[in-house]
Image (tube, rainbow, N blue to C red; front, side, top):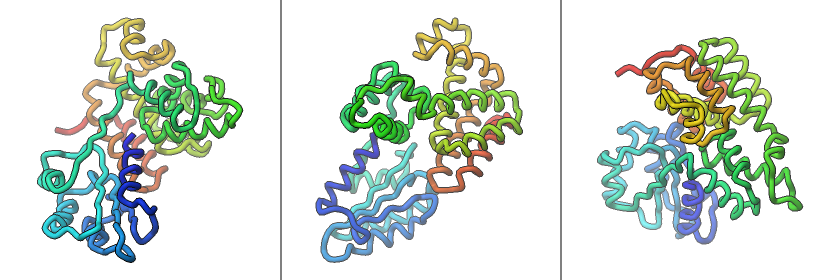
Length: 307
């Protein structure tokens, strides 16, 4: 998990621990490249090391990222800069120069087949939980493939079970309302597929009012839409073949086949671009309700991505 690796890296750079004087965090959507450059140039209080972390830095435009290039001409002693982002363009001048001067690490996204196994291993190491294959697969189906959200739900599950019980069941998942959220996701995607804006917005508002976390909600919407477009890509396959290839429960496959009729293949690029934009917006601390409402309205419009 990238977050774990970044945490280990920071601990290695700051062996005596973090404090407000030696550790600063910025988010690309909220801060400028110039601000970050100034932070790197400003020494920590005393003579110790300093770490500046920039989250979602790939959301910056080229001009903002290039504000950091002067640092490479004269890097301040005892300062470290961590640029953490998704979908980084490895062809840019900034990436190539920083990679040459420092180090670049890539964390490949786990496949749908690998996720349940990772979840079982992570649950055992971090929380002492013994997940069965069914429970791990159910969590991935209900929460999505965002590792940070899966980790958060594991923490909730461990708290719910307490120290006496380390082997959760699917019933335990239902007890902390994930199942209800998944049922609502089917209804929400149904409304999007039929272009019923009012119903889709009403369902979205209800889920947010019930306490569904915005990033988790976005993850579930994205997961269901990916399933739908995988089914469209495998057009002509029987339900049994789809169940085997996608490794999904028969109910999920059947429901997704019905929903796939509400989406056109050529809409796919625009849909996934909209999901990506919403993910960036949520992670840059924009108002979550407004971001998700905008996403639902865009998906209901059925617009195709322009070339």
